[in-house]
Length: 121
Image (cartoon, rainbow, N blue to C red; front, side, top):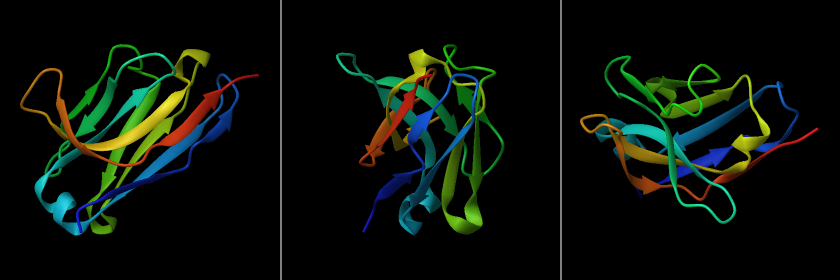
């Protein structure tokens, strides 16, 4: 089965730290770049980040650049998104998804169920 399963969301204070995890099926991990998009209430999909499956190429949306870090552990078929300087504007449901770094910004394909991130004092 091809699937992506996110975890790690929750409540975090502005300036705090939160680490999201995405476990991909072996099929997806072997064939696709993987990243994240998010959707806040009343807003459309916003691409956040993407990382290559074979090298260290990455993409970060301007809105989060310098505040989030994406990483990938191919041995575990897992992609992480570290929110090391979140702001209230980052509150959203975060979805792990396949992405394509050949486009700018990257396009997104298969996606997981999402994990809620709430940034609040």
